[in-house]
Image 1 (cartoon, helix red, strand yellow):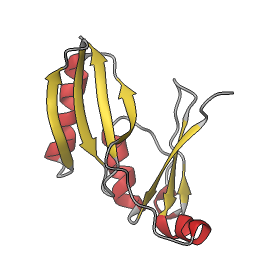
Image 2: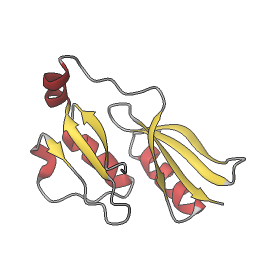
Image 3: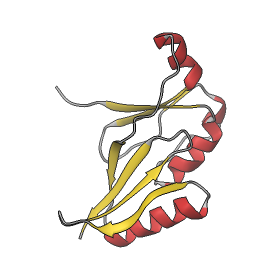
Image 4: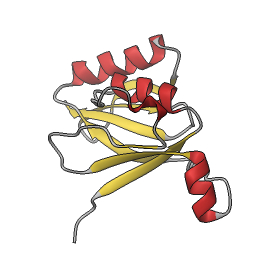
Length: 126
């Protein structure tokens, strides 16, 4: 058994794809109009599934809501990369929940939120 995928929903696929590109994800051309999108992930093998909120609402019978905590964490190669990514998220007008800091557990850490409010941890070893 292994974790295969993490899923988020969106009300604006184009804006959400723009956000995840800032985090380093790559997407095929022209997927902005699709209801289900999975970026190209080369390293981890774990998929990120981005679904239009209406698809999930149809399945669940109710609007999906983002959790009030981080839903996944992205490991970067360096502390400076965490700072760079967090800054690019902020400069692009997206929410930087917690500025990068040196966590007591030995990692450079930051927390961002995607356009629909899903919180994502960014980290790297110090």
